[in-house]
Length: 424
Image 1 (cartoon, rainbow, N blue to C red):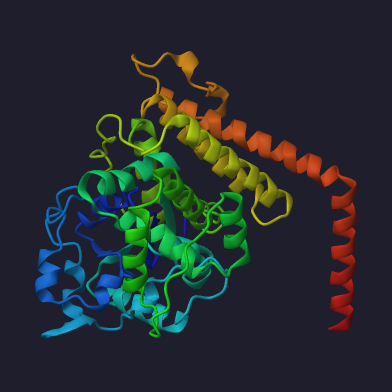
Image 2 (cartoon, rainbow, N blue to C red):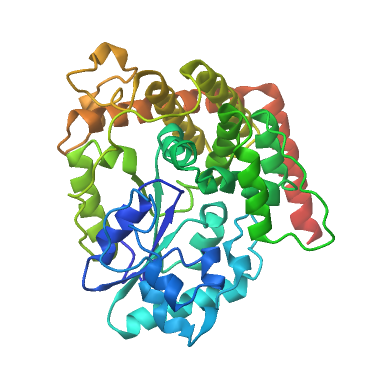
């Protein structure tokens, strides 16, 4: 437990039930809930726009909220002038470079101002981000006194929520955003490697002689994703998913798995406990619900498997090169396996239930995984899958370390490091 955490940062992906989780904190009297403090909309928002930005103003799928999303920012509006004081649209640009984000000092000042306002009222600030995961390592190191919780789902379940908004309601925003972020990071070697492995060719935006704003880039990619094959759109989505979650287990205090919370009451109850221990807050997660029925993906299970196999081959290559940790490879493998099953057999395949024979699940039930805590079938299966993936990653890394080229490379790196220290 961190001593007297100064804030809670919920680092969420788009359409991962992060708004629901944040609302559980916002409902507490001792919390100030700041919704998406990096959202580009804050650069132009005014009082009228703020009041109209509610969970019922669009097909959000969000829980009913007592106040507009951005109600806690109202005091930062300056009369009739649009925009939140201290905010700049550049804050919204996610990055995969590993370097400090653009305007880093101003981001720090802005978030500290929000946090101080909350604490001056005797409340704990809880930030719900949707544009921070690419910069997670920087946030984790820059705000060490905060509790950092990554909120996620498996990629197919998350994709289906994004895709249905486009397919059913012509809302291309959440399918376009991954492409816009990839476009802004196309110069980053790791992003380039991921896009190549997933066979993604980004179109070039037409020259206009003017600076490319975020709004213009989003408009371009909204038109683009509406015209391409859904499976190709998913490739872009998955590249973004992998890149944003590469530090999920190495630069956070905890990971909240919304897939599991929706299916395992034991997991949801355990999460209430560890969050209370870490933060001193006691939100209730009893309102969690799985999505209703099967959802559309836009492509069949065979094409999905092909894409996931490309991603798994990439994960092995990145682990071998040291660009991701073994823990990240294990996590990616587990969630890609779950996504493949959901795509092939429906949303309930991984969770024991009368309509799904247990032999159809690839997950092995192993009670020994759980040491001293109660468990339900969904939790046991999830932990077993994670253990299986982790063991596989460990075996691969062990074999890699025994390889002659790896041993030679390690010796060379140590030699250069030793020479560098002597030169210094």
